[in-house]
Image: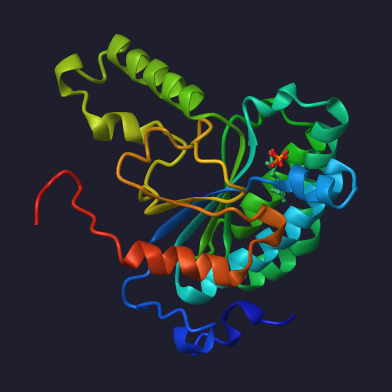
Length: 256
Ligand code: FPP
């Protein structure tokens, strides 16, 4: 099996299209709203599902690049709690792509130390998806490399509602006092418990909105938008986002 993830770790930013990234200040967590698959397909007179298929190729490229650069967590928004409103053929094409992706890639991801994780309520997904995800999570659970999160049937509001209910249940059982509830209490019940908040949220395709993604976690995330559609997003775009991030002044509400 090719160990392509790490094979050219020595390549520095000077070699890649002259985007000079500071390798000592790589963001820990990058989250991506993979938008524009439909428009990409439409522009080529292809069915929308072909846009999603091309989007999966971008995931393959981007996870390798993120890992090569030393990013620790990458989160891909693959299916929102609102995406069920799409035609059922499209929903089913997306679910099939997920299953295919995991079947085809799991060997290589595992060999490269990638830990697969899911954010979202899996219970509504087709059986085949649930089984494949369980297998992928189980197989990679002890890996110590990059964490690859798929947000699936995920909604930020839904996540916060679930956490709230769990906190309320803990209060009811006398495990937590109301006065002791703070941000950390809530975070413990989010899908992202024990993960750092995203440093950057990337959204291609020209849209500039969050679409119910990581609403709690994005409090101090830097947003990065680009006009290209997700299937056309390249390693260079990822590096551009990181470069821009490194040139921002993050104050977290304080002053410098
Ligand atoms: C948004 O583009 C994209 C999605 C709702 C789905 C993203 C999913 C994938 C790229 C593949 C899923 C598979 C795996 C392996 C996770 P859009 O369809 O809304 O594009 P549009 O706004 O141009 O119509």
